[in-house]
Amino acid sequence: MTPLRQQMINAMRQRGLSIRTHKSYLGAVRGLAGYFHEPPDRLQASQIQDYFIYLVQQRGLSNASCRLYLNGIRFLYLHVLNWPQFDIPIVMPKRSQKIPELLTRSEIRQIIDACCNDKYRTMLQTCYGCGLRVGELVALKVRHIDGERCLLRIEQGKGNKDRLVVLPPTLLQQLRLYWRQYHPDPWLFPNSNTPSLPLSISTTQKRYRQAKAQAEIVKVGGIHGLRHAYATHQLEQGLPVHQLQHQLGHKQLQTTLCYVHWVASYHQGSGAFSDLVGQLAVTHG
Image (cartoon, rainbow, N blue to C red; front, top):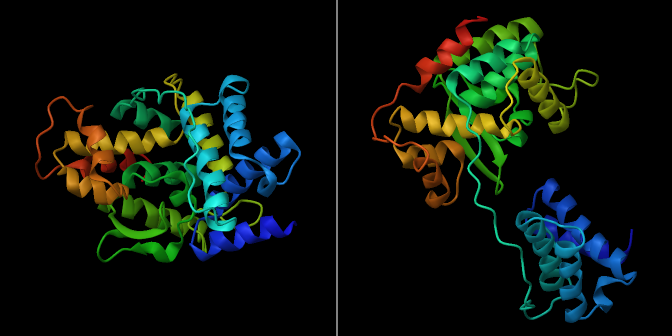
């Protein structure tokens, strides 16, 4: 490991960045150094500009991918190499404005019903029933379930923040049945080959794709589609948007408001989302 790489790792640890962010930022810097065959601390601003031209024009990276590279490279120069500022003009491709193909309630039911393994079925029900990111889903431990208050604790979600999300009673009942069958400990959804480790994100995504294909659902999108569906279905049931913001763990309300535009007849109210989750859980309860 080069001293510069170790300095960058130390700087990211100091600021509490997640392991996934470590990998992304280090990968961005490694790509920059590999392109010029020079250590990053020897490059000029014009070379960094040329590198992003290469990423856009030759590699065809999207706006989101380019921004990920930019964040990692900017972090290096500002927080490791101690540049006073990073004001290099970088031209990015326009951010695409696409509305995901939202899953309907019946399609979610079909996907969950198509999952023949109780463990993975419960996993998908939990992902949808609490609107979790896949990284949050695989990081769940049994102790994160608060059965008395019907709450699920999310530790160190996006932005390294903890939060409590409402756990529908019917989903809690399903999780109890699942625990009696598998007795997972400490991870709620452990790795099948190495129970001391959590299920990997890639395996979780694979199981979702398999269930989706088995259900013959052709809409584009991965397991994050369950989170999108959770948000829109909550709003359709009248959940106040600020409560949905907390449930989803969004830092900015504006991020949550994007879902309001997809619900034509949105009116705030008490909501009855748990009824829908119950219908999905009771089939296999």
